[in-house]
Length: 120
Image (cartoon, rainbow, N blue to C red):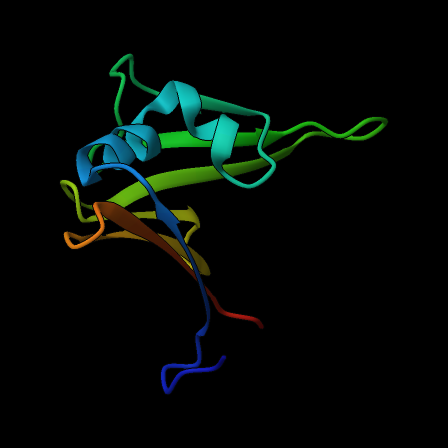
C-alpha cells in the first residue's frame, strides 16, 4: 500500500494469549529477537543490557551458505513501554513498528507489525 508521503506500508497482526507485559518482554529481550523475528539467525547488540531501549543500536545477521552474511544495522527510534517499539533497520529507507493492543475482554494481546519502506 502506498501512502501520501510515498512510503509503502504492510501491517500484519497476531493475537497472543498473554499479558502485554509478557509480550513486551519477549519482543524487547535482545537474546531472543533472533528466535521470533523473521529469519534472522543472530542479534549482535552494542550494549550488555538485556532489553532494547530507545537509542540503542544492534545488528541483525542472517547467514547464507556460500556467500556473505546479510546484515541489517538497526536503531531503536521509539520505545513506549508495553505499547510500541520502533526500529529502523535500513535508515532512512525502512522502518519496523510493533504495537501492542490489549484486549481485556478475552485476556489476549494483539501484536501488530508494520513495515514501511521507500523504493527508489
